[in-house]
Length: 167
Image (cartoon, rainbow, N blue to C red; front, side):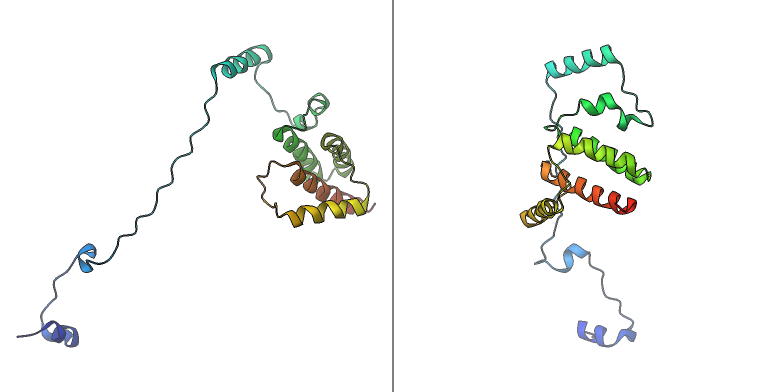
């Protein structure tokens, strides 16, 4: 009679071991189930906000984005520093003109952004202080709603733009 040890030691014995399912193999084994992430639930829009949004749409129509919609003077003059979307729009205008290699337009957009953010980025010592303060604060997430992050990004764009123009 062969034992389990003989089967392991002598694979040519002609006896095949019985198959066990994975769950039966170790009774003490704990199954690790991955935690399922709960779906994000979008914040509901109030009925009043919905009606206002509908009225605005009916009065002005859909928003049409042309090739130069970021540079629209009327749109840029109406930007609000307290709204993150407006600050990001201004940064996108600066970035777009930089990547299109229109450095003069980029500097023009940066000047408008400086007035929107309420800063002057002309003094190199102050600029270094802004960067070092931001780096020491540890706020490096791109999703930051703080104006500091946008000011530092604007400063980097301005430095690169001036570098390209050799000013």
